[in-house]
Image 1 (cartoon, rainbow, N blue to C red):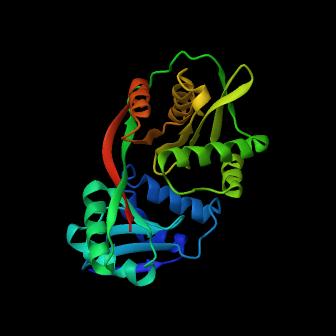
Image 2 (cartoon, one colour):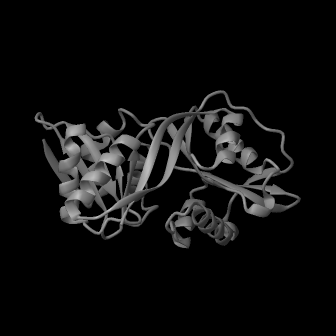
Image 3 (tube, rainbow, N blue to C red):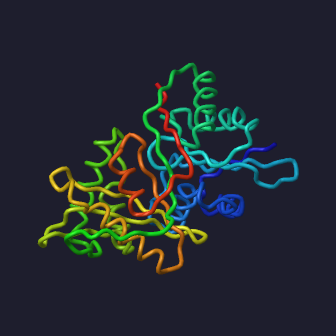
Length: 276
C-alpha cells in the first residue's frame, strides 16, 4: 500500500476520480469539494491536501482530503489503511482540528490520530446522509425565487447563523457565497414579498446533486418554508434526471422529520470528531 498526497485538486481528481465515482453518494462531499476547487468556486487554501491510497497494483483503494477549515474528511478507506493515513496526514497537517467520515472510519481515525499526537478527542455531531425517493411537494404559502447579487449578504448572515446554531466552525466567507449565488444554485422561499427560508444545491456529480445548506431563521419557523424550498430545489434537480441527496444533523429532529415527509430516506451515518 502506498499513500500519495497532493495540494492540486485537479491532479487528485485525475488519480482518484474513478475510485470516488464508484460510490458517488457516499463520496458526495469529496467530489463536490474537489469540483469546486477545480472550477474556482472555492479558492485553494494553502493547507489543502488531497490523499490517495494505492494498493499493490497501483489502483486507488482509498481517499481523503483536508481543505476548507481545518478538518480531515474521509472517503472510503481500507480498514487496515487508517493508521497509515493518520501518519501521512499528521506529517503534513498536524494542526488539523478534527475529522469527519462514516462513523466507524472517523472513530478509528480519531483514535489513531490522538494516540499518535498525544491528544484527546470528542464527538461534536452526527449527521445522516439521505437520498430522495418519491418526492412529495408540500402545500405551503409563498413562492420560490433564485437568489441574486442583492441577496448575498442575507445568505451569508443566514449561513453564519445556521453554523452557530449547530455548533460548527465558521464556514464560507461572503466572497465564496457570492460565487455560489452567481452559479445559480441558491434559492429563497418568499412569503408576502419577504425571504423566509433558503436552500441551495451543489454542482451535480455523476448523476447526483446534494442539497445544502437549508436554513430558516427562528422567527419564520413552523410554517413549512424549509420543506417548500427544499422540495422546490429537489423538483428542479429531478427534472434534470438527477438523483438527489442531503445531510441532516441527527440531533435536529425537525429537519429529519420534514425531509422524511417530502420523500428522503437515510442511507449513511457520519460522525464529526474534534481533536482536543
